[in-house]
Image (cartoon, rainbow, N blue to C red; front, side, top):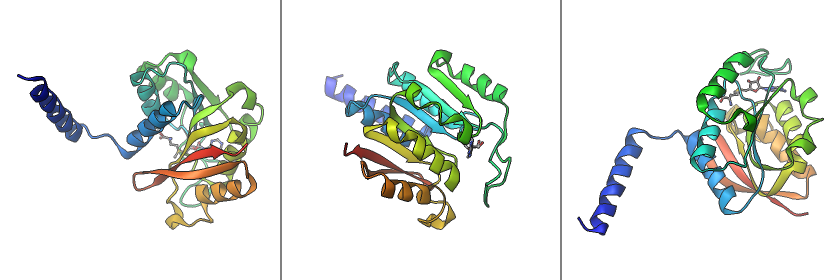
Length: 219
Ligand SMILES: C[S@@+](CC[C@H](N)C(=O)[O-])C[C@H]1O[C@@H](n2cnc3c(N)ncnc32)[C@H](O)[C@@H]1O
């Protein structure tokens, strides 16, 4: 078989596998975020706000291994007690409560070196302020904490960690009928208005529920 025919066969097998084992929009979005930050030479770590039982984080952990991005650490933030008392419908206080033991078991099964995973347990109000310098820089930020107030805290925290080319993904951008004055959208629009050093360029959608942006710095 000629090299060209072999190539065509390999492409056909790849396409067939892709339709059998289709990746979710979230997986594809995180994959693209890692790839574009790597292509652009953006240094820094993966930060996730709202971890629950490590489903999204497991995707990030897998992709980091697949792309040999060994220098990238995972910084994962959650109360593990569920939503805070300022949760608003459709969310409620205590929703998504889980145990850290479940998260740690899932983490072990994912095969990523535990030294690269930093689980930061507690309310963002308490855990975020003392941590900034320790992380240094963010390449990919995954915001999955749903609420306006929680997202506000997250954005204030990540501001000094953002690089030229950092990707920020909002898992719940289209909640509340996509209204710009609710939830993650509201927090992001307000933050951009008071942060003139950072500009957001629309990057890609995350299925039917999320959006992501490439952040450019004007420092
Ligand atoms: C939708 S869940 C996250 C889902 C997760 N990414 C997954 O892969 O399944 C939202 C999470 O945000 C967390 N959260 C929301 N606001 C928070 C806050 N202010 N402090 C700490 N955790 C918060 C909740 O504990 C909850 O686990």
